[in-house]
Length: 345
Image 1 (cartoon, rainbow, N blue to C red):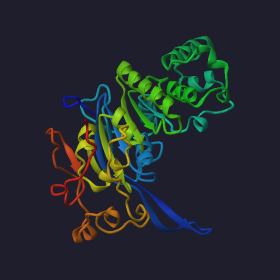
Image 2 (image 1 turned 45 degrees about the vertical axis):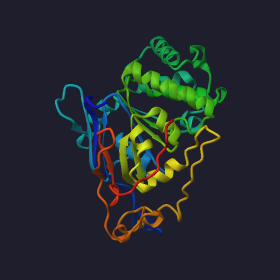
Image 3 (image 1 turned 90 degrees about the vertical axis):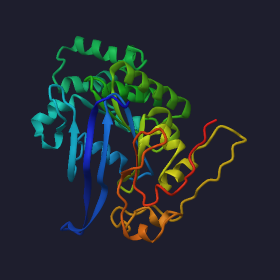
């Protein structure tokens, strides 16, 4: 991954939602769903966002696709024919429509992401019809059949409706729809969290196969660290709309630098009956993004917090991993703490 070009670069990305009250919708506050997020994704890699529910993972993915409009920041993409990254927040609707063909999203719940009144043929073929890439019915059927084979489904299923499929099959249909326009970049929003464990493995393996076959770049959103470890190349840990740690996956799991990451890793089960590890239970509740604490957002729950943590917000800085690669962390004591990761036998 070290020599690969940067495909996506996010700079100071923020999304604030106004809190309103009463009939006149009077603004009474602001919810900072994501707040000054910075990261980049290399071409052909799987970059993961992980954290508790409500930390801003999905909002970040939707902002990058401009499914929702960010409040501020930059979203720079590598576009064919352009020597430098291009900020798509400067695009108008016409320009955005052209680049949308290179983006796709796989949603979390296959039960709600598919229209129950549309057969598979129309569901998978809809992006092709909307973008006027295929007009003739026969050609559309051939293309949809090819997409279904790609995700290991029988083309005869294209006449059926979503209710006739299992959860895993529905997610395969959703993947086929996402790849209909041959995108380069895919946001996978917890694509296996609604599936049984055995089916999760099948879908993850399929996504990996498709990544290698079509040289896809993934932004993978999840809260399951075991899935993240298996699937991703690099990981960013989010807490209350901010990235608190970012590193290559193996480095982060073995050598965490942020107390929040340490707590998350302590909850990862290890398939060894003789392996004993003390679980870290965080005190208190996750901070309110509408009224976050001063200083480090994590300090009310952190067992290592000191006075500086309560008043001064830490910056995301590179502390370098054990292997010499970049390892970013937002913690005042990242160079002093010796945190527990997951030991490898």
